[in-house]
Image (tube, rainbow, N blue to C red):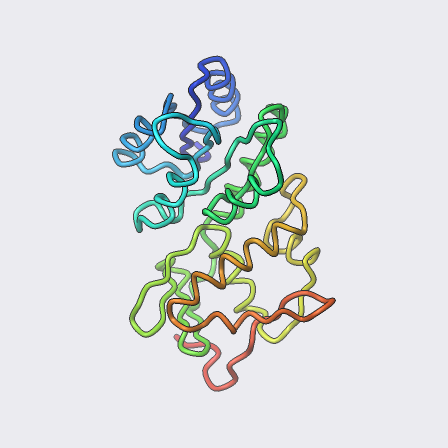
Length: 236
């Protein structure tokens, strides 16, 4: 089994169509008709990925997404939001800033949805090395999947965790948005460079609580760079 997916959609036909195709692709699938049901299911059995309708009833999808990110137990769950065909750019930006890893439109083909699920699941998977890194007091522990500073844990979603890992393992190098898409997002379908700015902004806000926002520098006209700490770049 490739992973556990929770599909949240009040439309039974859409929900069943997604569930059947996801199961055929090898995933274990649970379904919920509204956010209330989804909360109960997520608390009983933590999914690896949530596929949620932007207009799901039983609450506010953005608030639900934010709650998943703030709960330590579910902070690493990957999230794909299904927007309406009339969704505006600001709707997508809002979903990404609240913690979503990706967004698709309701008219998106099942094949593309499956491709996006596969891409998000792949980049959310644990990394194979367990070397602890530290820079400027910021500690990154891949084995424990824990980021902390000054004894305070920093909660990150799966993609922001991967983005920080890439920055810390390539400190002092400037990367364009296109290069970051290749390295961090991989072959995810139709992800725009604007997504890089949104996730970097979200990562900076997460690091702000421990005073590490400035570690990720914007290099005008080129991209982003993580400041290197030559005094203590890596620890055991």
